[in-house]
Structure formats: C-alpha cells, structure tokens
Length: 114
Length: 111
Image (cartoon, rainbow over all chains, first blue to last red; front, side, top):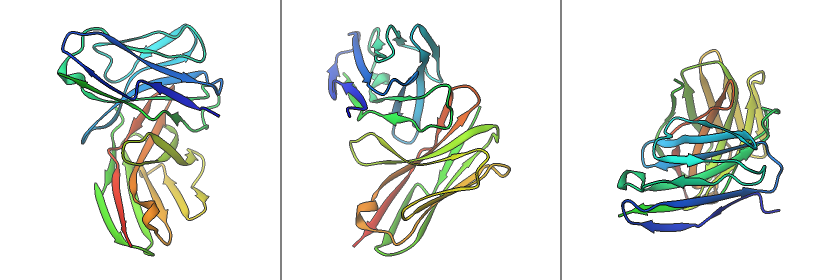
C-alpha cells in the first residue's frame, strides 16, 4: 500500500533553474493538492485538482504550474526557481465527492534554492 | 479568508499527564475539521476527522471535539507518552475543496 509517493525527497537548485516535483497516489483519489510548509506559516495551498484535466489555484500559486493528465499523477513545476521558493513541499490526496474523508499526505520534498 | 490559529505554539509536559491542544477558526462554514500529527522530517498523519455535524470523535487515547458556532476544536490526549512527542496540526475544509491549516503545536512529553 504505497499511498502518496513524492519524489525527489531532497533537491538543491540554483536561482533560475526549473524542475518538476513528482506526486503519485494509488488510492484512486479524485482530489490532489500541493502545499508548501514554511516556518511559522503553516501549510499553504499552492494548486489543487478535483480530477484528470481539472486544476485550480490555491492561496499561493505564483511561480508554480500544475497539470493532471491522469488520476494517479499530479506534478508540480517550478518554472524559474527563486530563493523565496525554498520550502518543504507536500502533496496530498483524498476523495473529492465524499467530503468527509481524510486527506493523505506524502513525506514531502525538501527544496533549497541558492 | 479562513484563519486557523493554534495555541500554544509549543507545550512540554511530563509523561502520564492529560493535555489539551486548541484550534480556532474564523469562518464556521466548514465541512469538517481534521487533526494531524507530524513527526520531524516527515509528512502528516491523519489522527481524527470531525464532520461539521458532529461534536466529537475518539480514537484510543485521543478525543477531538468541535464547536462550530464558536469556531473552536480541542484535541485531548490522555495519559501522554514520550512517543506522543510531535507537532499537531489542525485543518478545516471549507465549501468546495479548500483546506486551511493552523501553524501547529509542538508537543514534547518528558519521560
């Protein structure tokens, strides 16, 4: 039972570089989301998706792109990395049309931008 | 915008003590409230989920209550153990698919 799998676990980038954080779930969840966690600020929603082909912005979407071509995968793209994007990124999934089901989280990707 | 606050930010208690963690939110239009545990360097593990129509949920030594009208939830941990040391986060799910998290309470249980 893999649950939510995030790769890589750690990454160091230089300012201006681009990269994609991967997220995959095997629970057939319609809803998937990306958060960033910064000290003293809690988790903030970046983007979310309620199903394949459908995405929407969360609280802090600037500088990030997402797409959802399959139910299982929800990659997060940093287009041009900035030091302000240094953070821990979490992917989560849950059922969408059954709202009182818990969210499941991956172990996170720790990203440093130099 | 929904604001979620957790007080205290940090708590240290001796083993065996019963304790209460607090979570407050500003908008009572929620579907549910969820309590999570986060260990250092790890993701979030769901502990309890309370639906907006419920008053409380229990799992083992954990009991979570919800007072939607006053915008408050508490997580009660009975007979605390060193293994309970972690950061505890609450999150509310609003209408649609927006989730809002508190900044967490870091709990240390001293043997």
